[in-house]
Image (cartoon, rainbow, N blue to C red; front, top):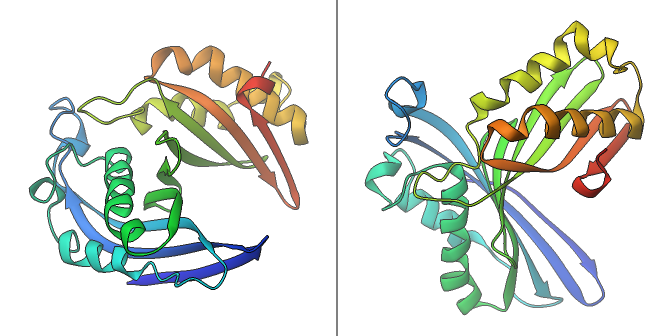
Length: 230
């Protein structure tokens, strides 16, 4: 099912973004036996492809939606692909499918392929570099905090990091230590502080690296990229 269809024109080119939804289950069998995600569980996935086409060219990305429906909808992903079906590896797989099918049928250059398992978690494959990142949004008293984490190197497990490994960050956002550390601040200072805390306390324990952190509070948005973090 196509969720949305949005285009914007600039300099004789059009950026086309289309989203498609499907429901499927997966079993992350390479996780430890104690991990709940090793067992069968379901997600309502949203896949968003963003591509660049020339103004006036045919720009229908619906073949991607057809592929998702026929291959994955209401199926066990483990039986449909030959890799560990995490959202990260699925995003990379779909980027490759796009290059081999849609790009060959129409003059479109993939900018990004995003696979969302929930409204707060997603994986993104850069259509140009092939770099895969994950995004996780946390609710806090200071606004919505979104982490973008990149892979140190994907292997057959496919995990940039287990989202469970980010629980200490969520606890820090809610805990008294955050206020004592100056989290009453807002804007760029808050984003910079959170980025620094993440790099010092979370990053050594995971298989990924912080790319950026964004804080949205009311009408204010603050973004701290890796090179800016203290």
